[in-house]
Length: 364
Image 1 (cartoon, rainbow, N blue to C red):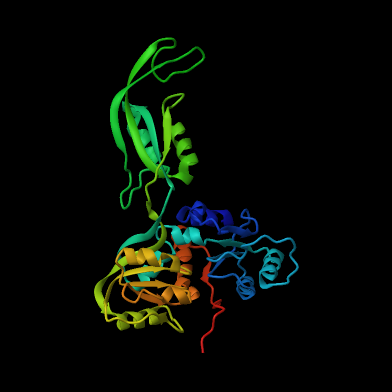
Image 2 (cartoon, rainbow, N blue to C red):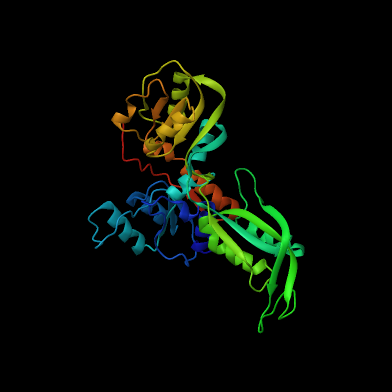
């Protein structure tokens, strides 16, 4: 199996266009045409992690946090990133990272955190904006089903927990084929009337190219007519954070103690306990404090994230319980997502979760 097959599986689950603008997710180092000997799954790429991959004989390291964020004018080994770059290249190790694209993907990092907590009725806390478009095309009645199926297979028609969504309106189209054309129906030089179906469906904007390719391949006309409109709708299936519910409410202290144990938190920080019952939970792995206003607006009883600044704690005691569990601790189970994606498709491929704790923060 080639490394590019594994990369393709990861990017189908968490497409790179889902990453935030500051990010550098994707292939970090190496050539994906190489045959894969095994994959080591980790949160961070460090020298110790690369040594672990070398000892296992694996030539692929898959991380959540990208090794390379900034541009380099020289690679001299002056810091751990440069040393990792040199070591990976020297040992023919490919490094691939799925970061905020995996944060924002359905079933991604925040869904895994919600699973560990035991949340149900999950919704994205801050859906992505300006990421959807509407496709409209016109198809002869007899071929409408085939074109719709091709569009759905290309990624169209997903709204919330529904797929194969479209709107269809019967009408009549006209056209006149000129000399040199090869019309599917009608006669060259004569005005033709055809019963058609207007098909409308929705798709993520980054899937536009493959959707148009699928449309052109499935449509019977030599020159299919289609329109694409930008939409202002939120994309409820992708975005930052998660809000969900517990089956049964817990006291603040019971909930915080359970979270501390589940995520092996050395020091859980929180604001003042007010005696509220915890049932509606909002969360975001990593540095998610920017989502606190959304958590309050949606009526969450608690907001959990990896990092909260000192001044962010002020003024919210009556609004919500805030719990800061550590960046590493909040995202540590991301490795399990990588494992599931790859294992489901390639059951015999060599996989291992890194045994290296890369958390640079220690607790007394």
